[in-house]
Image (cartoon, rainbow, N blue to C red):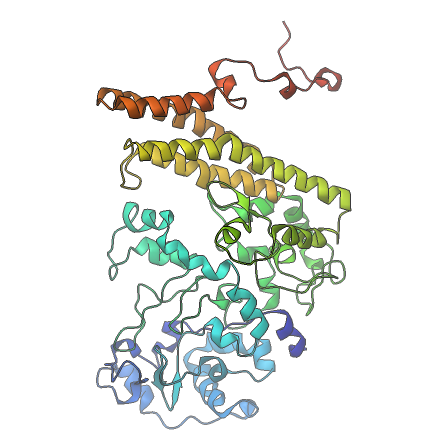
Length: 509
């Protein structure tokens, strides 16, 4: 059974720093050389509890662990007393059933940056995707090619400016606690190993999905496959993804819960067969899809994948949505075309839905994304770039009210509308999405731009003021916005047969 399991899911293992701290107080251990594993047993600076542990007699291998490797048997014979929580979870895992123990995952080479000597073994606290890939080669390769693996790139983004500077301050080893415990908690940190072999506390513990590890690999399998039982049923549940995919700017969890899919899942969770080895929709279960069903799991025609974006056709995160392969093509990279990705997602849908329903849904989604792009995103971004180019906005991020307004429009309301459309949540499309976006655009952004134009005129920047005013007039006089100037929208916008369905566009006299 375990052989089937490892072919369908990547299992990762890490140990919290505190879980090993009783036996390994590596953060106080002086370095020998950066390339040599730190020997905790000879250290004079290890605290009394660690010294006590090092002076204990050799570990006696318990009878129940005879099938484990000698190294792992020694580990668990001790840790069953020292860290019983980890021991119990591991004992309930398929790793345990397959005689995969602590050492198989935590073993290290003496030259590894984060290698430490614990007892008679060279280990590392962090278990990276590179380590997991020794057994789960295919899953590790797919993950490495995924967008999840690059989630740590946020450290150089506009979001990180907010966390580092606007919201935070470098109070923790030169890093903002907002970054350490907020952004990096989901996106991942760059793990820093100190000269004494300890892991920098501003970067560890961390299970962010795009974590950059000391061995150069990206990611943390344990972001989804929680240690130490690595329960496949847990990884398939939407709550697992909802650890990061929730909140005002990426509320996929809330959107899913509002959708018909989420309602069905809650009502029929006991029929989901979440423990199944292969877990093929339409065969092993049909009660409802979860995040994993659509984005990762096997169908009757498709294999499981750990490239989380391989079935996504739109980029719904950016200020302007583009097809998912557009950026890569522009950079000259060869990637899976968006049409092929959509074809694969439609294949998932056909397990429960007819072709015409699926095709019509995608027409609705494309229309909603186009509306967002054409009515709000493209005009808004054009105006923001123009004001920046003309010197009417400073180079400092978020010191102008308009920058906050624009950020909320695309990063919060705009994403909610687009994701709501993609995952069939009506309220997130309209009231939490397009309504909030429209209010932000007409009641905040437009008046703020007018104020900037007025100030520019007073400051003698007549040329810049004229350019921005012309651009704003062009936007507001366009077909989608002319109603705001008191001009009637095109007749085609009004349902001609509304009265036939009992609707009245105007109140009766």
